[in-house]
Amino acid sequence: MTSYLAEIRRRLQANLQVPDDARRMRLGGTVVVRFRVRIDGRLDDGTLTVLQPAAMTSLDRSAVEAVQRSLPLPPPPAGAAVIEVPVVFTIR
Image (cartoon, rainbow, N blue to C red; front, side, top):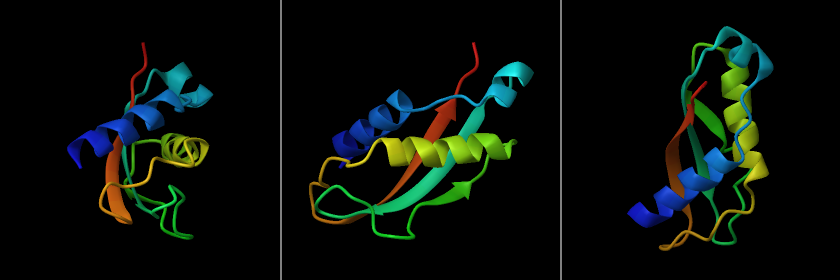
């Protein structure tokens, strides 16, 4: 499951877009999202939530959008799974 979570993180980070307001303020952060992945790589309806928000709501929205842009995800190795993953925003 460790390599599966690493792949999920990689996909989310690849689809992440830093919001303009966060970039202007040079404010990064981490948002923890939770969702349930079905065996076909899609999410169960209504399961995508923000567990731990960042300092800006635009970062939270962007983290959720990154998950949506990453669909479908690879099928979980042991069948449907609940995933909790950090989405990290780094401003350079």
